[in-house]
Image (cartoon, rainbow, N blue to C red; front, side, top):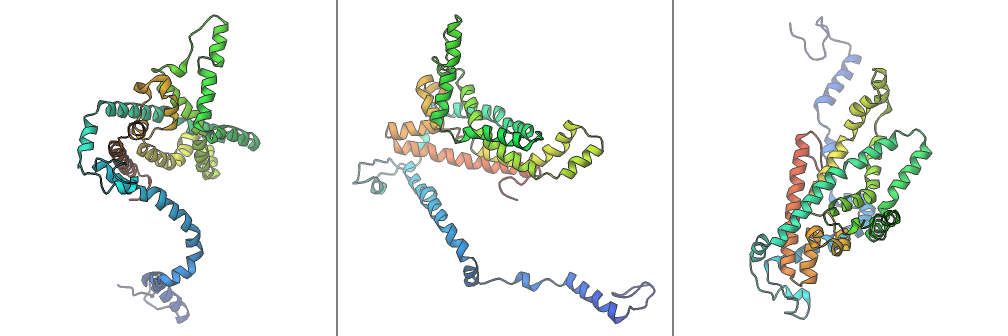
Length: 346
């Protein structure tokens, strides 16, 4: 026995008043909406969105001028660039001789370059292990505070160092951990001298990590608190009704809600692995020596601006950017394998 569309199980057809809505519903399910596929011409889109486009135009111009146009200067990495070969540095690009990949071959055989790479990777791994969990733990701690006023005050105090310059951050640490700082003076008053962490090369990597935690942990707290605010309270109530305690609710409700944000920040952090900092290390390089404080950013600055070797510095910077891009793509692919969106979707 076959039943046709719109018929009843007993084979009879419903009245027309009932059949017409059924047919209309079936047509709505099977017939695509032609209006959704209609493309608005670009003139219509311009008239509709011209205010928004004009508002974003200054930002687009700034990005083009300061981010993309300077990329054309990477051509000097394949030249023996001499800014004095012409009347100005711009036209010198067209008069400098081409050397191909000679600068990159020199980079591979440069022991100072590999020393800077080693310091950069060690500092990145150390900051990833010690710095990244701190904002998560502090965000969970602040989120557990019941009183909103106490939560707001704690959040503001932790976020305040984010606005400090690195000069001020290094000065604060110098006044606390330096040879003339509070700790050194206190120990000297009790017969203990020689305390100075700011000039200790072996402790330098932990010192700069502590500075980064103190300065930038507040920004991470804001991000994770925003993610926690989006978690429905019904999930916590349902978990509590099932007998889950505070720790089990944190493990099964809170952390899964933070996982997309953690994956996104990890991808961005991995992509920035070769850029652990510039001003922070430049300010303290003379105190501990280049062997401990020379990273890729300071190495490019030293070779390019101090030594005037612009082509070699451009080659190192270009290699650093390409490797950073590859790290972003690899980390984002790994996030996709874990089921997260990452920086962009598949």
